Length: 139
Length: 139
Image (cartoon, rainbow over all chains, first blue to last red; front, side, top):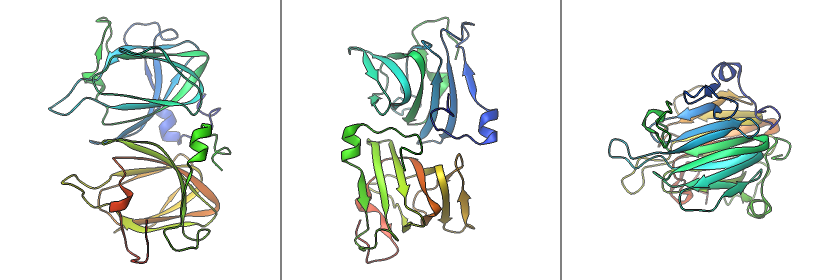
């Protein structure tokens, strides 16, 4: 799916594609595949891949160590993304469209019938501090 | 060149592709074309396009308003980038390869014979505070 979106990975990056099933064991339905390009103290960039209709479950990025929570921009590269952000109507992103999620704001998203490739531009990513609404989830 | 790299822009984004000739009037030789996706107080993401052998001249991103200077990761998406960073040998980036430039570090880069498309992931971009080595340059 990344190759179809014109995205080139190095052999080393292909070895470290992350598959997140959030501890639920239902990957095709609830999960996320991702490649992290960079994650410094200040900046993070990733590619996210969602299978057809796969969902990334509701969560938020709270403040950590006195810093504001993670700020994320999702840019759809391929397919369709249905994005749900606390207090807003559903946002549908087609290729080239994007949305910025403010820190500590609940959100979840799912791909349309063709799956989706999403570029994420953000502040530092600290997955272990994410707060999921479903308490069964382990990131 | 963006389309050839598989990158989709919205019609509104196509209207605001920025062309920077740095006030030198020699665009094909020294210049840069770019699309800024997002530029908040904390995060910036852009696509940079270089024509064949076009050069982005030497500059650095100093601290501004008590904040450290801009930190940039350049990821080559298409073509070849020849990157020169203060105190280092030339870095050659092929598609999928990237390099992170620390704040306030002199750097310049040029495309190979086929031009280049580069994704830039960074902290906030403040072009008016960039310091160019060539004093004739106006950003």
